[in-house]
Length: 369
Image (cartoon, rainbow, N blue to C red; front, side, top):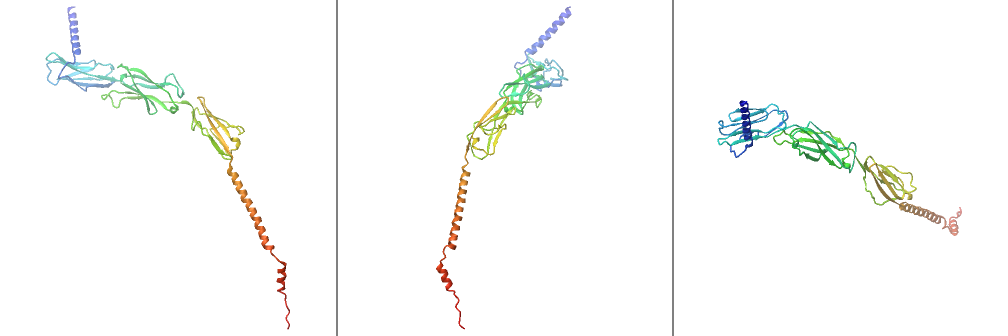
């Protein structure tokens, strides 16, 4: 019984001394142990190693060693080598290298170790929603990250296409593998229709970590955004003036999702109704004068355009007809005058006395032989 109590006290004393080493680590040492490398970033399950130069000067006669929770350590003079074949502890304590100086003061250094595990899966979805969205309404995107460590080093980025929407980081300090969901609120517009939403998870472990950092992407969701019709042209066009007989064309084209329908309200006595986006009348009359109302609608909303049309009499044709009439009348008058003058010159100037005088001058006289 006495021997068992003695052994228990000895172990307790050693543990107390061990705790004393750890708790008093630091101080103002001029010759502190040096780890190579100074920090370890290790993927879960991979091998790793480091060395500690306990002191620059001879300290073989002093107490020195390596405190560790896993792996094996070997000494070669004042150099201690540590190695582990497969690091399977995510929440591992730092390795401590120490020695006790001649003045009984302890000097030590720690080797920080980060054990990481990339996400096993990254999924993307809408929170409490499926199917199409409506422009102007609020929706929540969510990026679900499964079994990642350490989550505090995780950057989660939301994307629409190749455009970065927002970047988030967890406040969780857990070193073990955790599953966490990141969310982002959006208000889609018509420009988002057909866009692809997705997210990526990246472990940023610093310069000692793998380069480039491990990245896991989610799948992509193509968004269908419903929005009310939006006109391609002005909603309050100016007065349209068209000449009688000319072509009239009114454009009420719009974009929308679902595709919009068109309904025209026309002035009276202008024919059958139209249901296309462009109204065309090849030859207008005075009856086509008035207000044309185009109503564009889908199941999200309706927009209305009012066209005021004024039809003018085309005086160009009247003037042309008058000019032609004048030209024809002038031609007729010219022909009548010409005929009248021609007959007068040819027949109206003969004198009967001149006729007999002309005949007497040409009477034949017989000659005597």
